[in-house]
Image 1: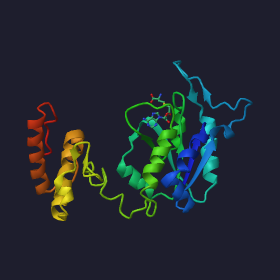
Image 2 (image 1 turned 60 degrees about the vertical axis):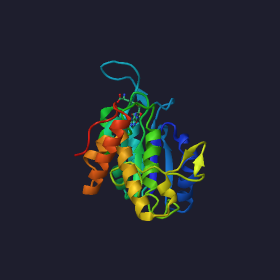
Image 3 (image 1 turned 90 degrees about the vertical axis):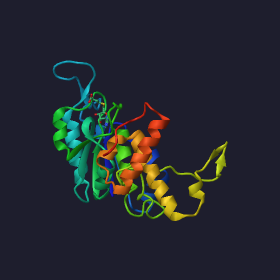
Image 4 (image 1 turned 135 degrees about the horizontal axis):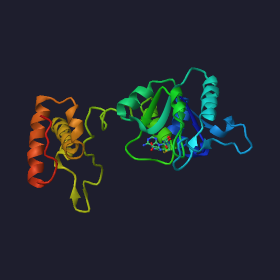
Length: 256
Ligand code: SAH
């Protein structure tokens, strides 16, 4: 995959994308990350990319002209047309399904906002606008890195262990089950016995129940769309009953 990112602070990308798993993906030829300085497409002495908003109000907006020039010029770099993504708190929430979809693109072009955001006309260049969540960042760079990271790790061959992206949070509509490693007892806290039992059937059932419990506790909204079996619903009813005993102020909705 080729990822182009246009930003007024292109130097922030390198330290992240050149390290660890993304760095390895680049060395293996699975990823090429190209950062571009938006100011290359300005024509005044001060390399101005922003201006005051029409109608007044605080802060500065990114001017449309450098963004249009940048996107057109970077598209020309090829070798294939890029899927163009802009970032904004007003965009569609980014999620694992979007990461999976974007991981199948040959080329992505990210345009990172700054200041108070962009002149609305710039968004006409976007194939889609994504939001990381309901909060406001100072710029789109972290969004570009987040989306790159989440998408690239799904490209076959990028993660070391085959299948390590399979049973994760959101991949089956639920949060991931609790995980433990050595030692079996740490500062008085013991790993659940079943995980030490070697009984794969019981371990599988415990993990499903753990995933359901965590999802019920922290993200009950996911249960509305997660594919659940009859057995899952029984497990959930047990989880809900258990949690109500333990914490009478906890979430009370169930999926059924
Ligand atoms: N005034 C805008 C926020 C601008 S923040 C508003 O109220 O909606 C400046 C830039 O940071 C944005 O253009 C966008 O590129 C990026 N950004 C900020 N918050 C973001 C979020 N939650 N998701 C994705 N990008 C975000």
